[in-house]
Structures are given as C-alpha cells and as structure tokens.
Image 1: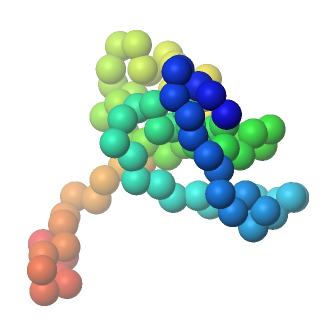
Image 2 (image 1 turned 90 degrees about the vertical axis):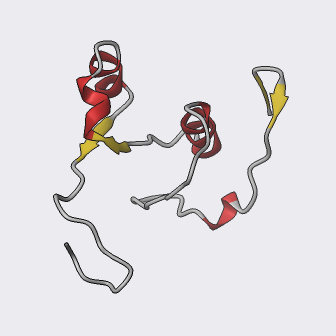
Image 3 (image 1 turned 45 degrees about the vertical axis):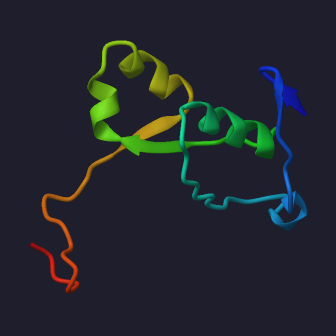
Amino acid sequence: MTLLGGRFTVVNREHLPKEGSYVIVCNHRTWLDVIFLAFSVWPRNVHYMTKQELFQMMILNQLLPKIHAFPAFQSLGSINNKGKIS
C-alpha cells in the first residue's frame, strides 16, 4: 500500500482473529504510526489508548474522541529498578 508517498507492508495479518476483539500494542516514533496501524487492520475498528494529557490540548480534545481514542491515566507512582513502587 502506498500512503503519503511511502510504502508500508503488513505482515502476519492472517494471525489476527476475523471476529471478536483483540489488543495490538505498538511502539511508535511519530503520530503517523497510529494512521498506519488503522490501515493495517482495516476494515476493523481501532480504539486508541493515549495519554490523558493529549485530551487537554485544544485541537486534540476535539479530534481524539472522533478516532475512538480514550485517555490513559498514568499512575501516581513509578516502579524503581528494584521493582518497588515509589
């Protein structure tokens, strides 16, 4: 598929269930990656979990709900290198 002058290839799509829900976790470098993710599973619907701070930005607070995004609230603590929550 050609998109925005570049190409991307979907591999192992046959391993995704044809029916029902599933979770895809991806690490991304740019905001375009979420678009590529949606195209890779199309015509299935994608719901995005994104950090809650993005919902506080003027333009994004209108856009994110329209693309089925929902806020993820980061925990108040963090896990240190010994596995303890501080």
